[in-house]
Length: 367
Image (tube, rainbow, N blue to C red; front, side, top):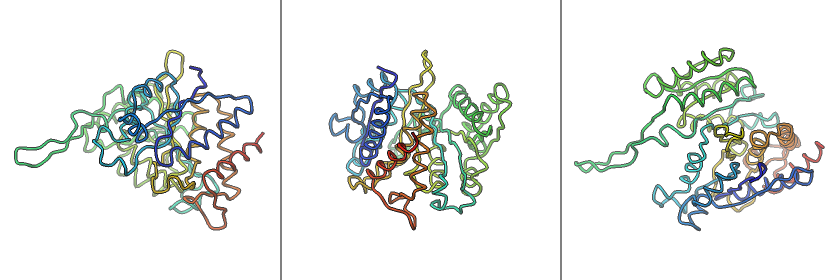
């Protein structure tokens, strides 16, 4: 496959709608001598409906071969009664695991035009630019043993195992310190070392990696509950937050709301560099499938478009084009266009497709 081939997995709910706007952005680049090849397949509930599984084996092999995936969203009430291993979300989790996507980058940046859309006061979030780095293939979501068993007295007992190895912690710590060197040079490592053995190991290993390899980067350790409080108390104190799978899931959604809407937050999930230096990667908006608004043409496509900007930067090595796309999104917001989730007084409400059109117009204005 060409290094510029992308596998589209739109998924369920609003996934296909927001991914269509990314297709339009790709078309804009193609008309300007940056052709990208797109292949498409099914995942999540859509895959279950077709194949009886949330991730078909052929789809998984295609993802491994292509190595760069644009992902929409999965899930919906139609699938709530499925067995656990058939639920749409299992397809996404398997993709992350099989592709070795251990580093989940979730930026939380407040666009100037949306500073008043946050649930916090403007002075707390204006200029906010933090990166939450979530370890994605270990921890309690994958640890064994796991499951539900019936006890002799008739009760049931559920078990999920939180487990991390030294190597898993070291590799995510290195990504955090490398990211910080290109930002404000500060890392906050988050765990619960006061009550969890995995937290004790996490803190010790992160500190060791820092002392050996990154002594120039500022490092602080913080308990996860305190970090959640500090995110809503004084969020601009953070630069890069690195944490485990469970805490990263919670804290990144908390940080997302500082920006005004989940519909604004992109993400990238990266693997280790291969022999050719390329990383397998999956890019997806942080929001879910939002089945309550699916098919209505009102979903916010900006998180998905911004996820594509991350793809330009991390998988295609085109930081200038990523910057251009991000500036186009900022320009549209400055012009007062809003989807329903970020609507503000005095602004113009638009739907999914019109928001995509406005981004294309803003891209034209940057050339």
